[in-house]
Length: 115
Picture (tube, one colour):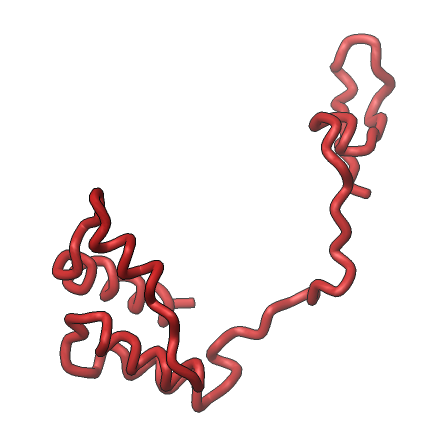
């Protein structure tokens, strides 16, 4: 269980009294993390896969979902499903593919490489 420390200056409470977090945060049920890994391997730990990430901004400019999918398949080892991204870009309030590929994706690649 998670516990929340109650500061000693809280009226009527003993110094650093601990209460289960579910009492401090509401009546939500406890969540088990059994079977969940304690860490996630970083992409840079796999040289072949990391090379695919590093090559993303050395490729000719990615300007469409088909090209992005091809590059992602090299990293994933299988073709990705980009239906959600397509719907988000082209939906009623989507930003469109051009701004995504000119501004957002280069920023994502730059930040990924900086990890």
